[in-house]
Length: 103
Image 1 (cartoon, helix red, strand yellow):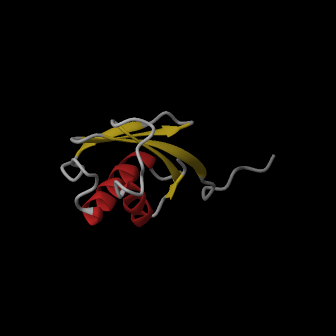
Image 2 (tube, one colour):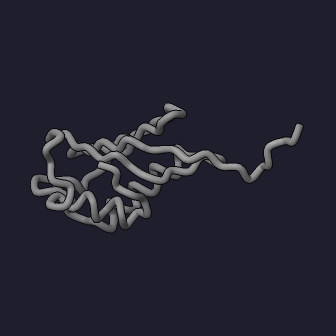
């Protein structure tokens, strides 16, 4: 039987939940999760896109490990499902972090 190569990577999708004070990520199907305190999500949306992108990258990097790679993020906020991700600039922050926005 051929053995799996060490370079094989699994691709996962993450659920990113953003509130005014925290950023929470849960990866599927591995069910790994983590939270990071933030201060860049305010009343009108993202106040600092660069800081938001760095925080998203740091949280994903902390959780994903060596063999798991995250391709896309399903983004939701504490404001509900009808939140416009473009107006709040979350779409821009996730794209700048290097991930695809799924919803």
